Length: 286
Ligand code: FAD
Image 1: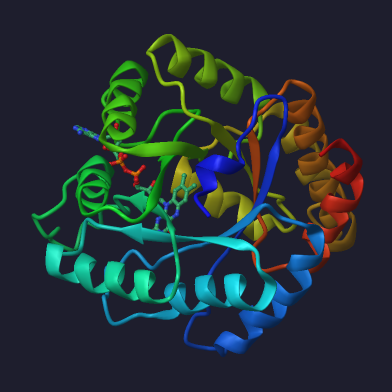
Image 2: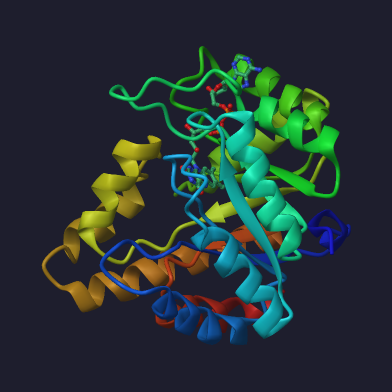
């Protein structure tokens, strides 16, 4: 099923995101996490893709297929393009198609100073247009409430987002943020620019201090005073920090749903315990 069809006025679509295993543990570990995450009734589960653009890496496809086949839950495969040729992308698209995957999150991927990008796709909009021309997939795109780190300006970032939507992105998923006002302001700016596709809010529960610095460095998310205060108070108490991080994410979600957000995309981090605690506190709102 095309995920765009799940979005309906007045209803919030609840989705989850998982990632493939690294080399130190087997894919079955991820399957086990998915078996538990399935109990939280996600409308769909997305599976991230390594930025390396390695067409031989089939784990995203395998996991996305497992979600559909084992649990009958719609899945979405992420796909990056900056380090891929058209031939690499064709291999992956064929693999997705033959495994019944109908939904793709088309991404550029991060630029790496030591890796020369392949020249077939420069932006996610190029990949979106390429997949749309081939047909057979519903395509989503990423968006950035606090503006993408490489963008010239917030205005230019929105202009570029519009190019991506016009190229065929039928809905958008946002980068994580810890202050909902950035998301509300972004949605207002996107709509004013004529971007009218559904936008899911990406929410990341922060449950340990290591995660915080990584998040800020990687995506530039601002840390509101309220968040910093909680993290500082409990930095030496992992259990309390975890509870506070879960409560903070749940609080963000309650506010977003009450404000009528199109979707909540929870970065589940392959962690059913944390996801379950958040789900328990918001399930009656969905
Ligand atoms: P783009 O949409 O191409 O935007 C990147 C930059 O280029 C922006 O500054 C934009 O303003 C500019 N730009 C865009 N289009 C144009 C244009 N036509 N002309 C000029 N400038 C333009 N990374 C992974 O490696 N694997 C994943 O699985 C993954 N999943 C993600 C899921 C979500 C929900 C999000 C928000 C991000 C994810 N990322 C993932 C990270 C993503 O790859 C990076 O943020 C990357 O730097 C940008 O990707 P993009 O698709 O948003 O790029």
